[in-house]
Length: 236
Image 1 (tube, rainbow, N blue to C red):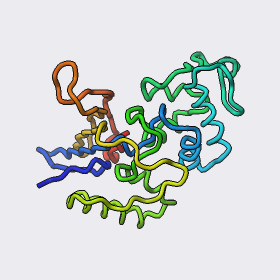
Image 2: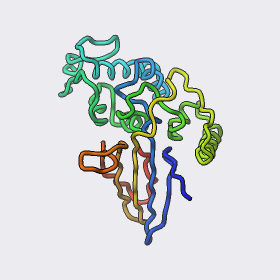
Image 3: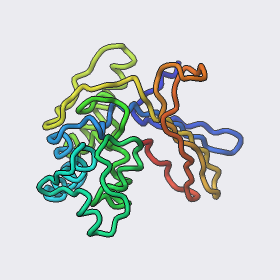
């Protein structure tokens, strides 16, 4: 019996000449952009960027974007700073409503946004992440890039899930461990035909009945297009 793992593991089928890849990722393995405290944001951004100064600047910019006041943090940015850079949309001084709003934070380039998609969510309501639900990419950063240790932990995690027993999670210095899990998921389904462009959908869903009676609520939905012979993206 197939037991689906919500950690980004690819499940692949060959269907009438096409390769179908499905991945599921528990949002509990990410950092909630609205709930994360300053130290958590700073630690995570240092891991992603490997640049302490840039991490501090972006931490302040994100906090200035979401806090309710117009007071600029030491290395942050409020309305006047956005205006001086010629940016049309100032900080909204509220929680992020959709992930795409992160693109509007001063200092977040398109390249950085693509990196951040694998790390951040809006759907756990908790400060920190659950390493038992984290993707391989996130675990590699948390475990100092030790691929062998990461793969060993992922294997232990899968075996433990099948047996219904817990496994010791890796330490997450500076990032609260635990958080919310098994509530919201990103699901990606992609079909590829050799020599043709791949296409599919990526959706984030939350458990629990929706207004129309469905057993889940769709929080985010987007199309995915890939060049021919390109590797499928990680869900985000």
